[in-house]
Image (cartoon, rainbow, N blue to C red; front, side, top):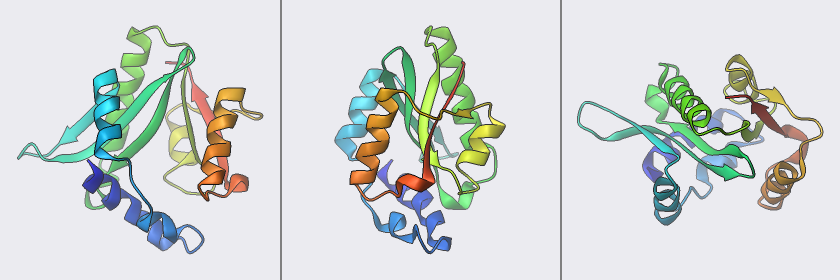
Length: 154
């Protein structure tokens, strides 16, 4: 799945202020295994069973937090990300989570605007646990003024 995440990250090359993300670290294989073991990881595969997209999430308080949603660059805008997100929403509802949360970029077309179309709303100000995640992202170099926390009911 790191290969899929690297491919998805290359979409940031068209954004001069964020192009460094295309070369940044991806989730480690060990972290993917942890999320899979937690039972909140969904993978889209091609006709050869090779991963082409994934959504990794985990419990955060009483909610399900999306850590990463990635689709291989050449397969983006074909509904794979939407299908993965729909599956996570269904699972969150079935498991009784109060909300699904995530952090994302405000100004990137395939980030906040995409999630808003999927029913997510910006949480401003974000609750403490999401603010902590935003602070960690800022420490990693993500621009705080361009990030937001979002949530929706399952």
